Length: 259
View (cartoon, rainbow, N blue to C red):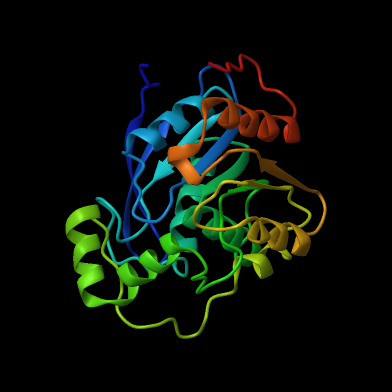
């Protein structure tokens, strides 16, 4: 299907990194801005993310971006730590171009960063976390053991740079960033939606329950039957429901489309 037109944007973070982004205007009058954060090794330019941005643009304008160290953005990936500054840059841009309400929607690593951004820096009106880890260093599934190999081993970082255009920092976090579940406890009174699939091969359901359990009200938990992981498994129907949830928090704008 043809995607809604988007326009390139170059963002600047508070630590002076250039972040590649795109703005998809709303299809109809809307004052809701949606900041879309991709998963690890993803990009706003990938087909799955573009499809999600297209669907969400029926509910508000979408600012999608590449995390640091990903795609055309500068710097190195810190795998969930300084990425909160990338989300902050996208949120500030959404405000600057006129969106009165801003909701962050993050998938996998992007979901963890959306939680941490809202809990640590704030400045958003609602948060949607999809397929996110609750805690760091989880190795309980084979896909996550492969992710840790890519992050921790020199050959893994080389493979990720050459194969996925993702540049990862060396070394370990110092200090350890606040865990996503702990950040979720600091988001209230902003509404939080936690979405997780019961067929997620990366993170089992206890991650979603931990995030939801620590979060304050208002909050919702959607356990999606048969849903796998993150952007590639998200159906248009699920994305439309997420967009509808965001709109319902603030009242429907004029001219909302759902196609």
